[in-house]
Image 1 (tube, one colour):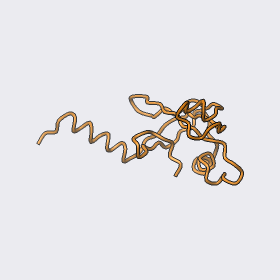
Image 2 (cartoon, one colour):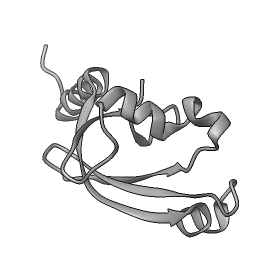
Image 3 (cartoon, one colour):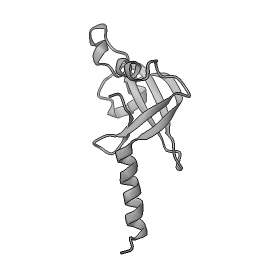
Image 4 (tube, one colour):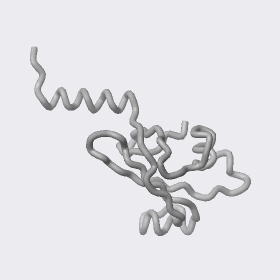
Length: 112
């Protein structure tokens, strides 16, 4: 039985999602949630960093992720703390990270 080109492409996509992706941090900038998210910001005036990641592969897809500055009491639950725990350093340009697809179908840095 032969598969169509579309079925083969879908199986390849599914395989990549199941195996996970790798990405490289290509930019980091100081920003705040209002500048990063614009009108859609749910965390008004939160200071943090915006990280741009290029997903490694043929299509050179990029995505951005915002890490807010944690409060002293909430540092252990923060994205930046979990990033350092997983990758043994804070985000830096050129660092390779694991990338996952979240429940909404968007890329994000794997922090687990």
